[in-house]
Image (cartoon, rainbow, N blue to C red; front, side, top):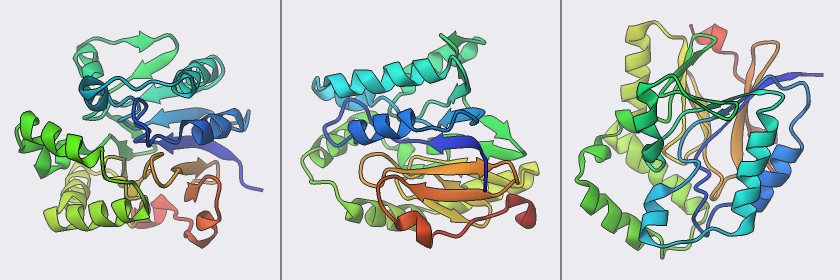
Length: 232
């Protein structure tokens, strides 16, 4: 039986009505006691959405409380993204939030872990334009098509290729990001997906294999288990 060492999840977007907070809370309650690390790979709290309008049900508070509780027994590492960039000014100092370690990026088993927005060309668009697009996006019903659309968009922009080439130059065996909401393990590139449409996450086992999984459905049964050592 495989033993999970670390769990990676991203793009929760607490503060939006599309966040699957109740499912996430159940998932967090079920995390194996033997897990050593929980990585929060950005966009956990959606500061952009909260600036547009206030939306914060009790279930979103319960998620944060559970994460804080987990940090009492496992290592919780928080890597802010573009939607929770309000945390980034604190990165200038060696800071912890309760027991949660906050980092801009993290090297785990020679895998470079970061949210991924630094490698996204769309982040060069003025923030006012991005916020207007995001406001319009709030009114679009979210579904699996969103992940397909964003995956195609970021393929066209070359975001995935950009970060893979960067980690190759730096000598890392691979990278793990969020940001695009398109869960995948493909060669040296891994993406957690999101908890808006996919409820996806990545696990690293003690035998040094990686697996992309989906909570609450059977998609994970069709996903290949990857050993990053094989692509070094």
